Length: 570
Image (tube, rainbow, N blue to C red; front, top):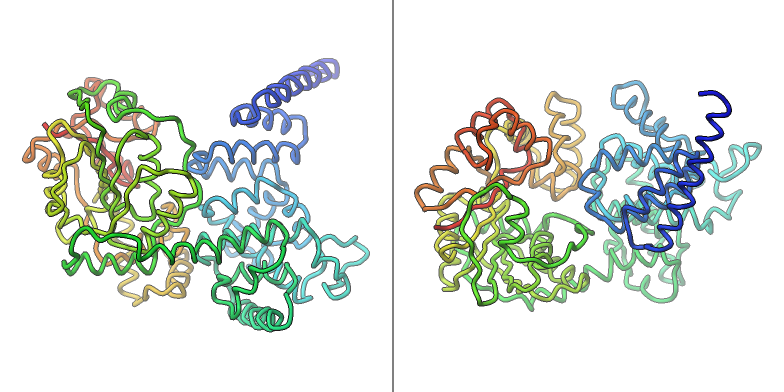
């Protein structure tokens, strides 16, 4: 391309960007418009502006968090400091650098100005190992900065070597405080899963004492509170309630809300949750105790609401080639969420089927308290939450038009017994959404679970953190491909669960035949569906379980998450 062609291309890009800005002005809530403008700004060499619009698109369309590798790729495209830092983190993982060499402190200034990075930290667990390692180094540097052990990241080059005491304005630097607060929110979301040295923990403990002492006579500096919150939940702080008085910067107030006010609200809910059934089964009690200690999953945002629909309309949109009977009762649709956990799935279901009555049950009151709070926050009011054991649900004498049981049956002593109970509650013509672990896809997990048991790791947060780091230096490090590896509660669910079964497609088929169910289809990413259609073009409805069994044998990681599928009771 010659100079004239380059100028013409640049002019065209400027014109396109101008038109796209106008489109954003007309539709400021249009995520796609923001995303397209961000891409144009990136092409124009304006990464800071691009980051702001990528952040807005992500806020408007939280389902983008489900494509986390693409999100990380976007981050490193708009943020050169992050790109360099993640490259060093990868080098460190291979033994080329020490953990202390991952971060160049001068990068803190660039990181602190990035709205996309802050959004990623505040809204979802980090699910990328190199980004996790880099952020652990950022945290270490920020703590060192506060202690006067790290050079001021915003100081001119000639001022190198001066610490925080020589440059006290760092305590009041708004951008740096915002980064600290975003990191504190991330650490709370992931339950402080990041690796930390003994020296770091000792320094953080000393800071905790210092902040507690300051609260006795006045109030600590905002940066002190923010950095402390990256190592410990503020509820661990003596006199933490005193932090709720007075006015704080908005970013720190968000940390206080997350770490103090919201847990208090959940605690106040415990006695308001009814118990629908007895909970006497030994395994059910063990599973319930695990989720009392580690409510699962820890989440902040859910996919945007695409508007209400009916169950049948939803399924026909998802499985256009599948054959199933219409079920359109004149009465209001009754839906059961069996094993709702912290409410992520139940809230999405209640928003999707807004005209339905939803009953969401779980063994864990702490999980249900989280779910109730998030339901109120998202203004979802068609859900009733209750404590119950799936094995005892027949005792409530209530039929349902749809039942969701994703990720619960394989944690029972006998998955098929629980499945039979749920089948008995489903009205004829009713639909069921089931999620079960695949034996073929969980072989790596089973090996890692055996390793955990052999090494004698406990289920404390400290043991889980230590186990994660140890596994990453073994051939089993591939378990880090699973999203559940990246928070304490999810890692416990992944590698330390008190009860877990895996199943196969023939076992699923056998149950469906025995209980007179029609298989509607698996929920699949587009690339998996395309691969199956190429392999078995004759199965247009994609419902032949024998063919799926062959496909999984040829592609064992097909159902790495779970078998997620829909069925209808005949």
